[in-house]
Amino acid sequence: MSGRNELRVEGRELRIVGFLCNWCSYGGADTAGVGRFTQPTDLRIIRVPCSGRIDPLFITRALVAGADGVLVSGCHPRDCHYAEGNFYARRRLEMLKQFLPVTGIDPQRFEYTWVSASEGARWQEVVTKFTERIHGLGPAPRIQGGSGYDELCLRHIEAGVLQGETCPCNKEKGL
Amino acid sequence: MSMLEELKEQIRTALPDLDMVIAWEQGFDAAHGTPLFIRTEADVDRLMVGPLSVQNPATYLPALVKAKGAGKIGVVAKGCDSRAIVELLQEKLISREQVVIFGFGCNGCVSQALLEGKIEEAGKYSAELTGVETDGRTVKAQVAGETLSFDFNDVTFEKCLTCEYPNTLIADHFVGDKVEVAPGCEKAPSLEEFEKLSQNEKLSFWQEQMRRCVRCYACRNACPMCVCRDHCIATTHDPQWISQENNAQENFMFQMIHTMHLAGRCVECGECERACPVNLPLMLLRRTMGEAVRNVFDYTTGTDPEVVPPLMTFKVEEENINERGW
Image 1: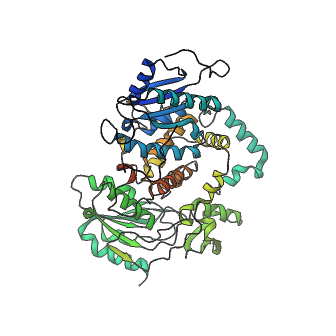
Image 2: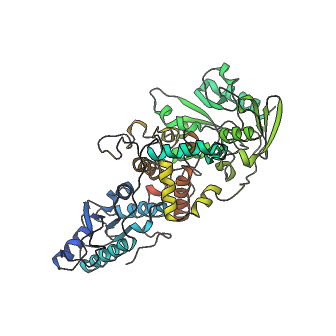
Image 3: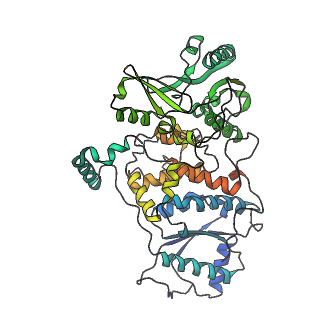
């Protein structure tokens, strides 16, 4: 694949994780490579036997651990190598997609789609558009914060003690 | 005959054929109910059904029916508990022949934490509470010889505010009259408020919340749908999904595991949130997932024992899922 990439933000690549099914999308990516289609290089591909193998927790794990984007791609519905894996995957991935907003993780950072082994050009389009989108969003905010009583927490407690009765933690008792 | 006496009578009659009946009794003080396992006639007298019957007895069922030589298990279930039982039936984790369900119409439960807060607000000591009663509109609390009256909506759980199933859904024995279904509001007020926040505000909210999590797994252990118990992927080392480190990131991941494993299964009984020792608003996550399931699959969990849960099946053409074009 081409190493040239016009999409770099401030000269740095973002971390995009791709889960591709072995039979269609991985083949599609290969076709794109054989066809020498220019593609951005931010995507790190993980090959899985079937999109039905993808536990939505793979995606949340990647996002929580700091991935800037996650792309899932499998066979088109009705074309699954194992007949019905992607039908189950579709339901699971859609649930994740609708759940993400409440977590504060941008749902735009996750996308799922279908690419067949012959669709090299489509793969190029998918990966370019998704990479563009992630670069538009920029690096993902880190989920930080240590265990219960780290320095920041102690400062909060100190501030709360100083506030006395008016401290919101007194209200919290009633929650 | 009062409803409680009628229920006691029915349990007494059924008890000889049952290993035990799971219900509630008065806890260590007047503000707490606690699960009761009725094995003998004498235990029946300790039965308590009312606003403090908060625990979900369905949580015990999967382990009890799997135990060696297990016979029939009786269970007294509120409407929300019965949804958990139905969901367990749907997933074939228990069989209908193994459980005998005692049903009644629930007037709603009282959150012990909120009630204590209100009592303190009224200038009394919550430790002096001697009794709690409710008719679904007001809650009367006896504190140090006085009766304090509170609006039910102020001291109840959110799940009771939005409750659409106050009556036990499937029951072998039903006592008392059915309670009229009248949800106080359609959507949980806390979720409605939370959804108004921006993406970044939500993330920082969760960061602040998750750093408080002590990963005691009380939410998991109280959950009627968390049936993996000792095989939970949150505590396995191979694969190691989350490290033992206690930080916001790992704790958040644990909550996501819990929510994702409850997708299309969670009956929103609120046990996770109630059991949480640090008051994490876990139901925000569960309710969002529940809403997604309702919107996409037009399915409400735990209402029909015959239906296959949505994530265990599929349709070739999904009406409510957009094929994502590029």
